[in-house]
Length: 152
Image (cartoon, rainbow, N blue to C red; front, side, top):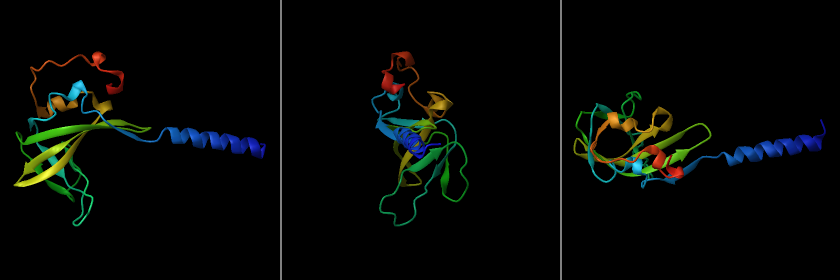
């Protein structure tokens, strides 16, 4: 193969790879999440809280709130059914392989306040949190097809 052609093809593939980099967007205004944002909701199932931060970390990351197990190494505790959680923001992460919406907020567990995130990977279903958190089920929610394209 011609070296110039090979270089051109490799450059093109490299350039295409760069266009598929991860992106992050604040979608707190998405109608899908309005019954959760800015108010207290309660867990409907036992959930686990993980803190992966090391002591003295100047830029701590958010703690993970999940209903699956992630081992015992960083487990803070298992939250009981009815634990109050407040979500304040939704961040959408997109990559080549997945899209997830992180519900970010805070909770108080055993007297300590934790900044948390709950990951909703969109392949699990758009409204998976309905079975995990009590919210106002009677609140009107527009059908998904009425959401602006950037929120789908």
